[in-house]
Image (cartoon, rainbow, N blue to C red; front, side, top):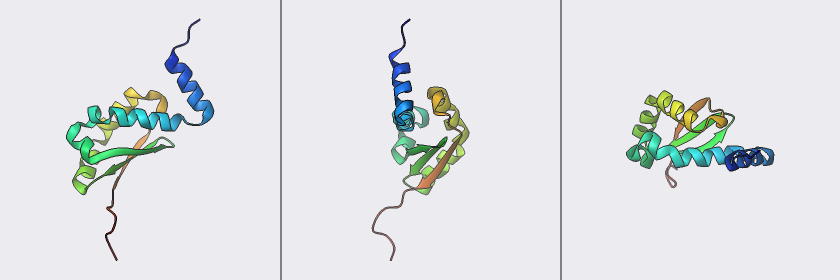
Length: 101
Protein backbone atom coordinates (compact mmCIF):
# COMPACT_ATOMS: atom_id res chain seq x y z
CA UNK A 1 0.00 0.00 0.00
CA UNK A 2 1.44 3.35 -1.07
CA UNK A 3 0.99 6.43 1.06
CA UNK A 4 0.96 9.88 -0.53
CA UNK A 5 4.00 11.94 0.36
CA UNK A 6 1.70 14.80 1.41
CA UNK A 7 0.03 12.51 3.96
CA UNK A 8 3.40 11.46 5.36
CA UNK A 9 4.44 15.11 5.70
CA UNK A 10 1.20 16.04 7.44
CA UNK A 11 1.47 13.16 9.92
CA UNK A 12 5.08 14.03 10.63
CA UNK A 13 4.27 17.72 11.09
CA UNK A 14 1.48 16.85 13.54
CA UNK A 15 3.71 14.50 15.51
CA UNK A 16 6.42 17.18 15.74
CA UNK A 17 3.91 19.87 16.71
CA UNK A 18 4.67 22.01 13.66
CA UNK A 19 1.43 21.46 11.77
CA UNK A 20 0.13 25.01 12.47
CA UNK A 21 3.30 26.47 10.94
CA UNK A 22 2.84 24.27 7.88
CA UNK A 23 -0.81 25.35 7.54
CA UNK A 24 0.17 29.01 7.93
CA UNK A 25 2.75 28.61 5.16
CA UNK A 26 0.07 27.09 2.93
CA UNK A 27 -2.33 29.94 3.74
CA UNK A 28 0.36 32.53 2.93
CA UNK A 29 1.11 30.84 -0.37
CA UNK A 30 -2.56 30.77 -1.39
CA UNK A 31 -3.38 34.24 -0.01
CA UNK A 32 -2.87 36.27 -3.23
CA UNK A 33 -5.13 33.87 -5.15
CA UNK A 34 -7.78 34.02 -2.43
CA UNK A 35 -7.91 37.79 -1.85
CA UNK A 36 -6.33 39.13 -5.04
CA UNK A 37 -2.97 40.81 -5.54
CA UNK A 38 -3.98 44.29 -4.39
CA UNK A 39 -5.40 43.20 -1.02
CA UNK A 40 -2.61 40.65 -0.61
CA UNK A 41 -0.15 43.55 -0.83
CA UNK A 42 -1.87 45.32 2.06
CA UNK A 43 -2.90 42.42 4.33
CA UNK A 44 -1.25 39.11 5.11
CA UNK A 45 -1.72 36.06 7.30
CA UNK A 46 0.58 36.30 10.34
CA UNK A 47 -0.31 33.50 12.74
CA UNK A 48 -2.53 30.46 12.93
CA UNK A 49 -3.34 29.20 16.42
CA UNK A 50 -6.30 27.38 17.84
CA UNK A 51 -8.25 27.59 14.60
CA UNK A 52 -7.80 31.38 14.37
CA UNK A 53 -5.99 32.92 11.40
CA UNK A 54 -4.61 36.30 12.43
CA UNK A 55 -4.22 38.71 9.54
CA UNK A 56 -2.28 41.97 9.76
CA UNK A 57 -3.34 44.87 7.57
CA UNK A 58 -1.20 47.83 6.57
CA UNK A 59 -4.07 50.28 7.02
CA UNK A 60 -7.70 50.54 8.08
CA UNK A 61 -9.07 50.21 4.55
CA UNK A 62 -7.34 46.85 4.03
CA UNK A 63 -8.56 45.66 7.44
CA UNK A 64 -12.11 46.67 6.54
CA UNK A 65 -11.88 44.82 3.21
CA UNK A 66 -10.72 41.61 4.92
CA UNK A 67 -13.50 41.96 7.48
CA UNK A 68 -16.13 42.51 4.78
CA UNK A 69 -14.89 39.44 2.87
CA UNK A 70 -14.24 37.35 6.00
CA UNK A 71 -16.80 34.62 5.22
CA UNK A 72 -15.60 34.25 1.63
CA UNK A 73 -11.94 34.16 2.70
CA UNK A 74 -12.66 31.68 5.47
CA UNK A 75 -14.50 29.40 3.04
CA UNK A 76 -11.64 29.53 0.51
CA UNK A 77 -8.93 28.83 3.09
CA UNK A 78 -10.97 25.94 4.51
CA UNK A 79 -11.34 24.44 1.04
CA UNK A 80 -7.61 24.66 0.37
CA UNK A 81 -6.41 23.61 3.83
CA UNK A 82 -9.21 21.59 5.45
CA UNK A 83 -6.87 19.92 7.95
CA UNK A 84 -6.10 23.33 9.51
CA UNK A 85 -9.53 23.27 11.23
CA UNK A 86 -9.87 27.01 10.68
CA UNK A 87 -12.81 28.56 12.56
CA UNK A 88 -12.16 32.28 12.57
CA UNK A 89 -10.25 35.12 10.94
CA UNK A 90 -9.19 38.13 12.98
CA UNK A 91 -7.67 41.28 11.55
CA UNK A 92 -5.38 43.78 13.23
CA UNK A 93 -3.82 46.91 11.79
CA UNK A 94 -0.05 46.80 11.73
CA UNK A 95 1.40 49.72 13.61
CA UNK A 96 4.51 51.27 12.11
CA UNK A 97 7.44 51.77 14.46
CA UNK A 98 8.56 55.09 15.82
CA UNK A 99 5.14 56.65 16.29
CA UNK A 100 3.77 57.99 19.51
CA UNK A 101 5.38 59.53 22.55
